[in-house]
Image 1 (cartoon, rainbow, N blue to C red):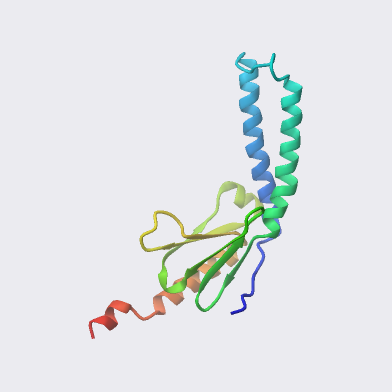
Image 2: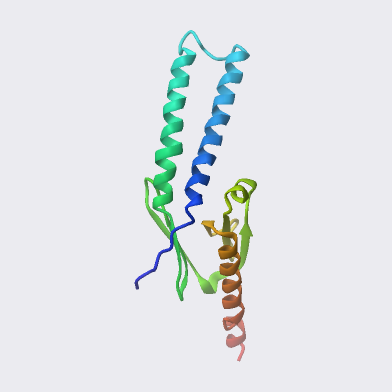
Amino acid sequence: MSIAWLAPEPSYRSYLQVRSLISMLIIAAIVLTGYFSGVYPEDKIPLWVTGLIWVLLTLFFSLFFASRRFLFTAYARTDEGMHLKRGALFRRIRAVPLNRIQHVEFKQSFLERMFGIARLAMYTAGSGGADLTIPGLLPDTALQLKNDLLTTIANEPNEDAHSHE
């Protein structure tokens, strides 16, 4: 079976870069708090060394790693299910059969709203969280996909009804 993979929106790359930068700024704030409170071991590691390491890691995660993650993220809807492939370092392809999906949720954080993207989360029976979340969708695309999935789910024959006949 050949799967027609669809890439996330281009703004998803920028979203990943900004999210990475925010994480690195939080780490910088923690280190600086330690420095100004006297907890930072400046006699062992000069602050400029830590700053240089921080800059290199920030550039790596915000530019290279986020872009690579974007390049290897794609989704597809087939007659059998929803598929997601991703992985900057380790490639992974996940699929959820359509007949197992019980709930579909449109999600959009504040940062995703700023970049004009959303996520679509699919839940199946017995799972504690989302079984599959497709990131980087235009909100209209996510809502249309959600409606299509819900229509497909609603029109599926009920297995329990057939077992009692």
